[in-house]
Image 1: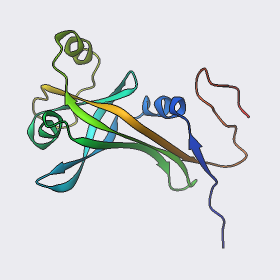
Image 2 (image 1 turned 90 degrees about the vertical axis):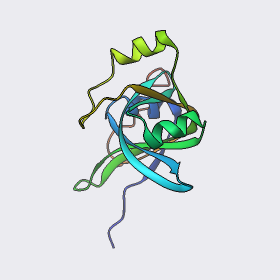
Image 3 (image 1 turned 180 degrees about the horizontal axis):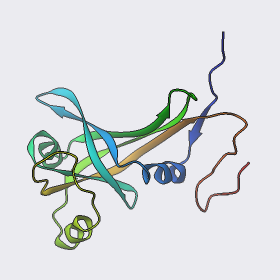
Length: 150
């Protein structure tokens, strides 16, 4: 039986560095007392994740200060390598004018039609990450945390 790739636990800096790459992740929240998962555009803002929404259940989760989860990943099924980062925290709408101006100018355009006039911050309370890779490839420890490959 072929062996799988070793699993590497990632530190917070590595997680944040990886989240800076892809711009689509999945938001897990509660809708009508049931779990819901939806793809969302996002960006990292400090140690938090910010999504831009039109309204509806995702905005409702924020206005109700729900605990939500966010996950982003990149996986290569042919090489059987990749990573996954999960953020858990309370969702809250961003209403500060200065923050809104800063975010609006740097956010990517939504993939679907319609206005996305609301920004929701996921205040990071727990961040975990895992990477599975070829054991012969160099290890990256994150900027400023012993960044030399090992």
